[in-house]
Image (cartoon, rainbow, N blue to C red; front, side):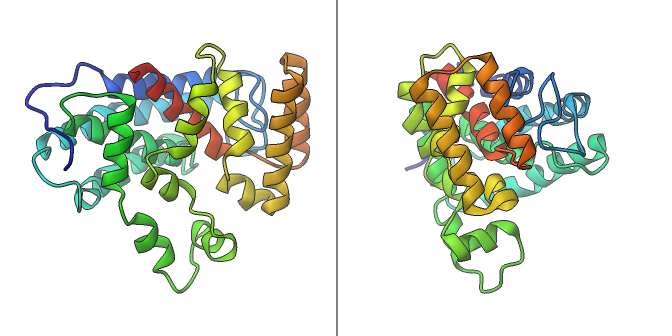
Length: 267
């Protein structure tokens, strides 16, 4: 079965939450290795102002994703990604137009776009129902787009073939299992705590692309150490300097932070 099915509009405004999630993620400061109000993290081609322009370009699309899901709520989940993909690409093109070709939010568009599309298909929206619907929508995605490929044309395909990492596709197909695993341990107040918890366990493809498995383990261990020993602004700033020195950016965890924020608000 798929989302039971939108005879009325959802009480939870997931598109609005998705927009707010992008702002929450951007404004969180300090954010080790990532763009924030203090610096550009490990990025030379983007800054806070660029992210502001990107969010302004991307945000209007979230309601369109939900409306598309609502319009096709009666149809089975299987095959709906083909319906959603052209709109997702159009949203990405709007982002690139606003940023001069810089990829600021491609991962966020994918994850939050799926949540909004799923919300449009559902009569009763909750964190559980959203994740279940996204999992149904993405069933077989890893097999089709990673396991089924012989050559490795993209970074994601190379990481799958070399290390078995499934990246954003696998996270979506699992119904955001990484996010769901850490949310029960989050106090619901400090987003820094949620970000560190995600960084400690997320097999972040951005980190692997920049620093290999050693870079991934470095960030995971650093985040876990802060969670174990306690963290404050001074220690977060030290982590920021360490990641910048190593050119490491946990962008995948930043995307999952936005997902986590939406799911926490949905209850």
